Image 1 (cartoon, rainbow, N blue to C red):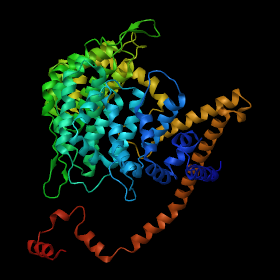
Image 2: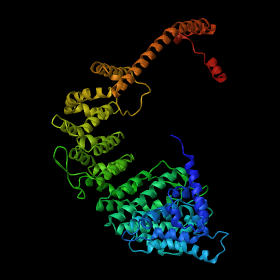
Image 3: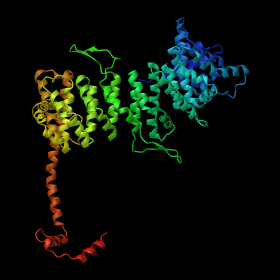
Image 4: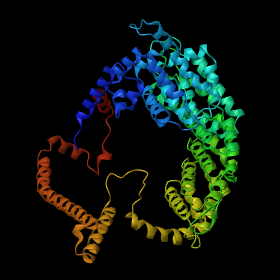
Length: 606
């Protein structure tokens, strides 16, 4: 495959020829095939210079973006041209964006100056409409976000002077593209420099306004989703900015720390946005302080999760509530299944994140409000939902791994975890999906008992558990582990090398595979199986060669090692013989202790 350089040279000549024609208009340029890539690339500066000299062309570009019709009349003017102009204005062409705010030095015509001064307001007039076309809103957002990235402070300066701009944006926050503009205005990730005012207070006020809007219009799912997406992006940006000692975004987090409000909205709407926002707040909740001297963020390893304590009591019980926003479906067994739902799945992940903070008070409150019982119920009820089983597995392991006696007592005694496993892990349920989870957690408890005497005592005192491990669990492991070469596919720590047993198991599998297919298929060389046999043979040959080389090396090293040992024995200094005589194994304890000599040795020791 060769790179086509001629393609770019052809485009450059194409744009040059178009701009050289004094009668060339915007439609002619936009109708030229392949012209967009050149305008966004090598020809960006030339195109911007031409538009600045002909500002009426700039007017047309904005018109194509902001004007929309209910009926399709002309595909070019309603589809092609708006798309192309939004791509051009959204390409962050510095000259075109600067022209909206300042007049170039060579601009002297009054008529052009008047057109230039009206371009920015012309673009913003799109927001004056009561109802926006979603496609046109996307075109508008692409152009306006490019302006924010290049001249964000100037945009805020115009917003401060004209309050209707912000009101119009909030009015249309139910449209995703407009919500993205509000997000960029709050975060204000702009490349504009040397601007005194950062508009912190105005940005905080905007953030407070949209949270208040979320609180009073939670019945509108579009507003809930869009506002939560804004807040999620801000918290995500905050978490990433901490690693670069950029504390500008952190003051906005204090405004968002309202877990009770977001949980209430989550339970009312059953949308995943509020839950994801709560997850972000938990993950980033640490005591971050800001130095006034050198203006950098200080990271304190101590974390404070006290703001979440008020919502903990409602979390376990809502795992068991039915989600009325989802409808039943028929599974492969022709049974009607009530879906767990994305909202409750995010609620379960929120509980998982809270437990994995290892905060004792958080975990104690969750257990008090019957978290373990709720987990046991949903595992059995949603027997085929692997995501639920995986989250529950992580939650239980995180609690047990803390090695706290009170938590261990709650899990094993108050909630009868062992009896729960024994009762449900039986032959009747052998084909149900939760058997995998029960087997995994059972093996985990057996391994954990080797490290925790408290757990070991609880396991050995339970006769039902002993019968279960001796019969059912060992039987399952004897069947399943050979398929995994008797090795844990997800060990807590990767071994440096495989032991001899694991190596032999892998090599035996390769040999059996080769032998079976070589017997059954004489023409194994021309298909995928043949390629697999060939690769296995290469691995076996390589391993056998390594073993032979290792044996040869050991054989050669034995005489050499003997000679070295003999030489070392001959070179022993005479002082060693004297020490051996004085401190022999049978009489060293009979020697008289010379304290004065010992003190001199210690004083002179270096």
